[in-house]
Amino acid sequence: MTITLYELTGRDAARPFSPHCWKTVMSLAHKGLEFERSPVPFTGVPEVENRFGKTVPVLRDGDRVISDSFDIALYLEEAYPDRPTLFAGEGGIALSRFVEAWTMTQIHTTIGGRLLLDIHAMLEPQDQAYFRQSREARFGKSLEEVVEAGAERVREFAAKLEPLRLMLGRQPFIGGEGPLFADYIVFGAFQWARVCSAEQLLEPDDPVAQWFGRCLDLHGGTGRSVAAAA
Image (cartoon, rainbow, N blue to C red; front, side, top):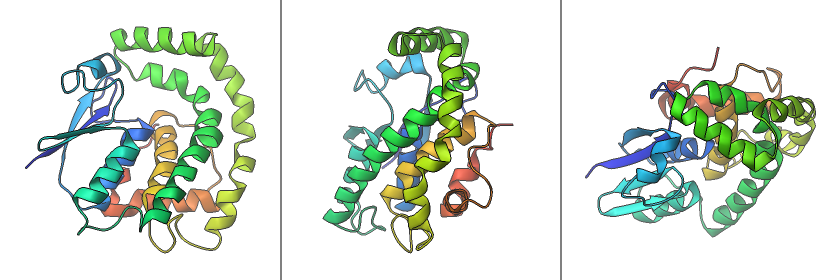
């Protein structure tokens, strides 16, 4: 039974960049499951699985179709209980909910605006038009203005990571001695930046950068299967 993951890509189908899709890629690799990756451009998302949802990732596993990276992780945990756990129990699910909220409010909002022009450059013309129109409507200003304003946020970025940095001084992963889905939530954000932009967000000796390197090496180097932006 083939598992298919629909994930967001641009002009180069071999460079998936969505942070949420990367959460699912790492979750599937964590479970040791084989799967096919189906690239989807922005304008193709509404057509996935007969208009199943408005966003990707979308996962098909036999007769089951699931969207949303967290819901997919919960499904994988239930459907494949004999494989390595993504949550290590109900407490891990609750922890991951907090980590997701923290990541969205502290990391995505800080670096997301800075990546807009990099993402735009990765897209086909029809997707560039959609991306510019939808993002400029969301932010109420041009992509260029949002990126310029994002420079100051990125300068403040290291300080926002101090809670994560302190924790990683005591243990190698957010999940403890080994990774859990909580790690993949934060990993997805940094992988998003790594694939889209050559801008250095962290110093090499930062414990967060070292943790990210360990995550890139997980599961046979799944994260390194896509090279960093040059």
